[in-house]
Length: 200
Image (cartoon, rainbow, N blue to C red):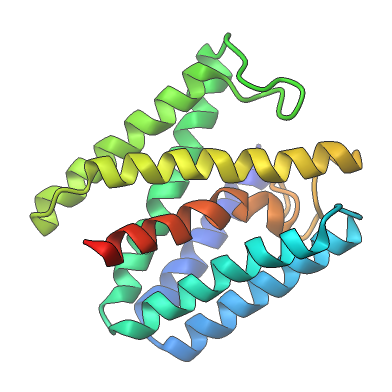
């Protein structure tokens, strides 16, 4: 747990440094590196359907870079999108670990419970309400939708991990595993939220 906390603090600090630098090139190179490492782990772990993995990972990379390139201020909105997914993940894990009893898809991901999912969605909704107060725009339902897509992304990567018989996709992030272990929820939630926000 100590390693997990230290790694989380380091990653959060790094993400905020990239976001507050407001440099599209640093941001784009960071996203491309993440995509490259994610694809490398997909291949290294012998996940089936490489083209599907390529599509999922590159879709995340494309929408991330495209969105931030549209407007200088969008890099901060991107940070909010990422934060929403982190909040969903964190509360789903905490509440699921403490109160989880009803398993959703035990064969694919034995730790995913209905209580954890509801807790994560509630936290995402509360975060959405907080952002609404600052931006004066209805975002709560959008952020809850982001939580649902984060859950789907987690399940998809868990499915491929279970199919390949691996617990973690790598060990580059102490306490977290590999890059895919860390970005699984973001792979689906980020493109979905970006698309929804652009359609507003």
